[in-house]
Image (tube, rainbow, N blue to C red; front, side):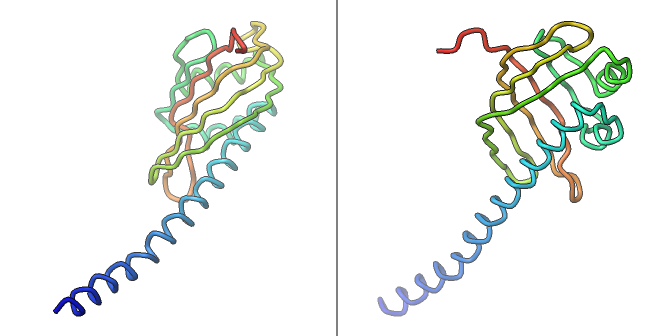
Length: 151
């Protein structure tokens, strides 16, 4: 009886192993997809590519900028089309965490340029929240916080 139970328990564990292996591979693939989406977003912001940003930003997208202002997708697009924003953006230390069809990224962003006509150069902590809709990752929220102390 013990042998029978041990065989059943071993078989159950072995049958679950592929699911764990595939889940890890899928998560790794999703991390790569989100990293690619973040890079596409960074480039679209620097190029003022409204068409790409309209696809990246979800309809209910919200942004908290470095000044603490809460902005919608429409407000960001209006700012972009006004020409009052011109940015050079570099990123470092980005970490991606995937939770099924949602993902959170954190990292440091260095910005050189103007945002809404105001000097915005500096180092910021960035957090973005992404949701997978269909085959694409969309940005639903992000926040920038200026780094004032480097220790």
